[in-house]
Picture 1 (cartoon, rainbow, N blue to C red):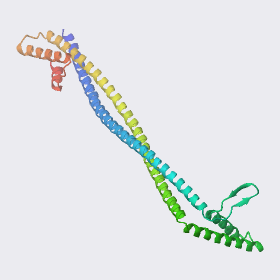
Picture 2: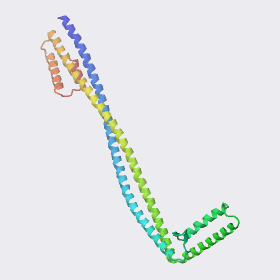
Picture 3: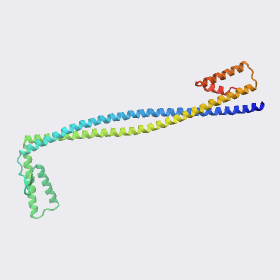
Picture 4: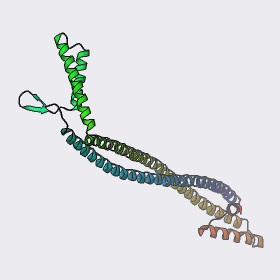
Length: 294
């Protein structure tokens, strides 16, 4: 009998040690679960904020795209006005005295002589003259031709300046071209803003994916730690049940009396075990009390 009591007492100590070990392991895993829960929740909050940033940039991009379309429409109107102003200017110029068109080898299309074309011819001759392409008698001919072109440019310019309608047409074209350029600049600015918003939206999207992946990793770790905590808790409960079974046998062997203090301890153990097995949560003090009662 004494030998059996020693064996049971040794088993009681071993099970008590195991119960303490499982309780410690469970508490460690529960602590990790809380940490992973906090990390996951913080990451999910960041993800929601980043998604809001993505939406804001998408809205800005769409607004800028609408503005681009609006500015392009204004630019198209400006282009139309420039075209109309050029047509009016050409019409007014056709009414001014000009040098007769010069033929190009037979039936080839003849080129209309304008101030612009004369200036282009003059610049060409000046470049050739500077390079020394014309010497001797040819040099005199070229110089004479350059003077004639310069004189013709002055005559045509004076004729155009004296033409009020032509002057108005020039001013109209100038204003139309300024409006055209301004409209083009506005289109470029809106397009740049739209592209910047789009690029930033893509960056926020990448950050959302990255943070969401971290949040999913934290959630997986949370589930793992919770599973391990539940497993350790299960072993802890089994250990407690085994421990109290051994204690019951030891009490029987000691011939425990039915004294009030022992009945009270027994009822207290049963109450705590019933509360634990019914799914209620015991405080740390109650668990320590349950483990230490013999």
